[in-house]
Length: 299
Image 1 (cartoon, rainbow, N blue to C red):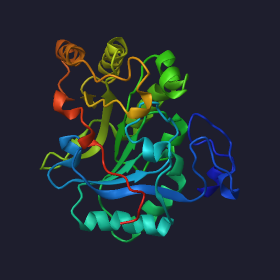
Image 2 (image 1 turned 90 degrees about the vertical axis):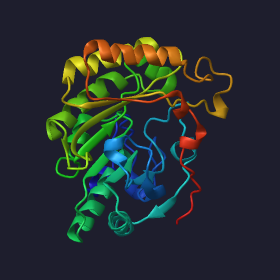
Image 3 (image 1 turned 90 degrees about the horizontal axis):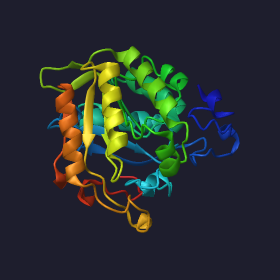
Image 4 (image 1 turned 180 degrees about the vertical axis):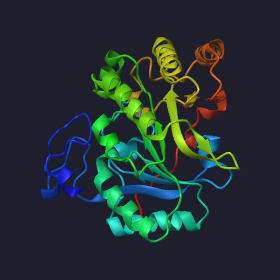
């Protein structure tokens, strides 16, 4: 598995960095896994967090690096601490012992080979929880295909429909073709969602879209695409929690909170299309209190 790091092409950037021999990729990651937080997380969708919490492991670095990222301390500033694959496996086991509903891998792609090794170790020691792959959606379909048998639930963002918007916000002018191919592969692996007796997802795809201020048209295209492509065979989470970060204070229109009239228009579109499996938020979600505290220290 680790040979994937010699000329790293895990993400669509395909930067080719030799991460096994001291180089770092576009994402900022080298050979060693870095994580910023591992804890029970209660702020995911109800079918993921439930009342017990999701066993979230937040990985440092990122392949996308959106200018508006709320977790920029770990995605861009690379805040975090190193762990071995053995230590990562122990973290998974510990989260299970604390009653987590699942193992929630947050921004994991650049560490996918190491994660697969850790999951093999953890499963050999009794890990039985569903594994959630919580990603920006900027994925190579080939990389997603390699996760078959390791991941039970895919929870990708569908951030942008327009490659122009993706280029401006994330420097990813090829976002659309990559996210749509990745979504197909995710669905092919999991099929229709499966839940336990408590309504906690055990298998399936949950697509998230964080609405951006001034980009209602892009949101409408995404909603129409998801509905026409997957119908009610996936879940869709329409998020209003956009929170402007301080370092984009001069960047219009991203330096404003989301206009709730735009959000309500998007909710209305979901209703008109007859979409049934949709999570929505209220305006109170747009708050920094919903952003986990990242100290970069091992706890």
